[in-house]
Length: 255
Image (cartoon, rainbow, N blue to C red; front, side):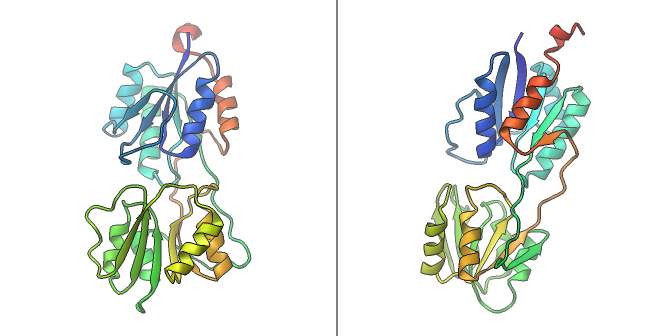
């Protein structure tokens, strides 16, 4: 009997993990997406879209679908989903693993200002007008309406709706990865003197961080949230290995 695995995804690594597990015999994989992106890239495995209704709803889904393993491969900033996943796994008595992408390391030449959230990032930009590149995702940018004195360049996968209620905002729709050379040209062309970013980790969006370093531009960096402690690894390969060594489906264990 195949081991039934539900992956909570939405990241490049979750797609890679789903493909790696689906390619192995004995695994039946479903990838769950939150449904916030209107045109997600093809995933290569069966996909479920939308929420579950909190930890209780996810626990019910795990039981109803007889899931043998839950894998949290969501974005490092999806703290609520990760918390719900850990609680749901406990409630349903289902093993859980997490794929946790390492954060970026500050290097010589980086001008990072670390803040706790988007509201604090808007405050950290200061009172004097600046040219700011927002690379946060459309869910958080509304916080910068509290700092309308700045000019904003906003990049997201989907349109920001409604647009920010600020006098000066320009929008770019794009999906990574983004090369450092291209990011450097973007920052120079728009006269950017500050970027606001999450510490997302990974290579796909690191280009803006390297470009800011090269140009001497300040990066206001939102710290990562605290995530629940569950068995985890930082690479797709290690999570696949961990999944392979867990006990098989309930029917196979004779429970």
